[in-house]
Image 1 (cartoon, rainbow, N blue to C red):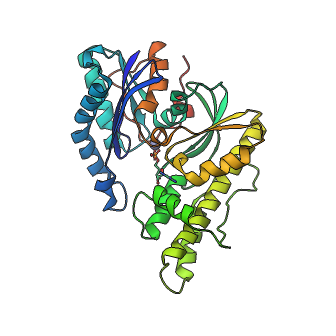
Image 2: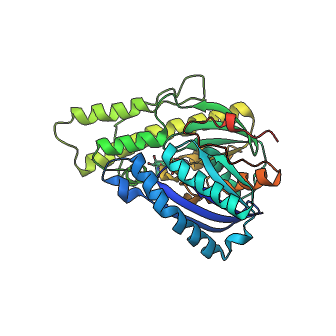
Image 3: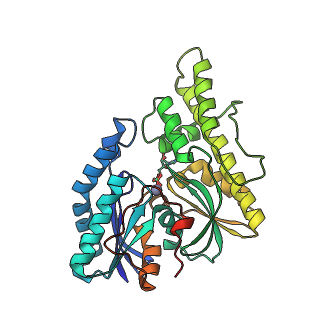
Length: 339
Ligand code: KG4
Ligand code: ZN
């Protein structure tokens, strides 16, 4: 099928054209980061308005880039949730309106389903596999038995990993979003004896907790006699990243050990992290496990990632009606497709 995919769950307006759920013909991502940066985080109302302005041009650019006319499209897939409700509604309403006007089916998808299956845009993987899904709102370990068949094995009890990066960045005065900035500082510095806690690391579960690491960073900064200079910032960033990466990698490897599965997909915006990629490379070497990272453009929010599941569902005849609404909160297990 030739699909248009739309993603507007947070602060990127994205449209993609994908053939057969695998061949990405275009993947346009219009970021709103500059708009929200001055407020230190995403302002939901501004995000919705910016999506409204941007969705039409993004779709035109995606169609042009793919060399495809709207009349050639055979289906539309769109993020239905979870996310900012006003932002989601822009993508969802656009998908419904276009599908209705073009007389083609559409389907609403779970955002994390898109992130996890993005790996399949670059390589085929045998089911079942495990997924570590780490973004601004999720830090979950899932067992993936097939497209639409997900089971949560572990999850964060409080902040998501990306949220912790963003909060630490904010408290260090490094702005929003924080992941890439802290990642760069961490790579330039050494933790040099500074150790932040690794919550739940030795507990007998696959869960995470990141809010304590963020508080430990805050307490460390408060104890300093002066605001941290550049070297101290690098040291803090390196120590913070080591703590987060250690917990994520150890728990994911533990999940592989316990499940007996061999393949792990690391997905979502935090999967761009260079420290996380490097640590997985070290730990997986010689272990028999294979850890797959989609390329950074497919880890961050983008529409093409939705087309893997979109193509699968629409080919099975599973589609949504005009009454399907956006869902701000939605568990991936509950979003599972049972066709
Ligand atoms: O998946 P994503 O683009 O949007 C959501 O679904 O949330 O993930 C965004 C999150 C943000 O918290 C951002 O700070 C984080 O991913 N992030 C990173 C890196 N790049 C983005 N975190 C750590 N290291 C990075 N290089
Ligand atoms: Zn995302």
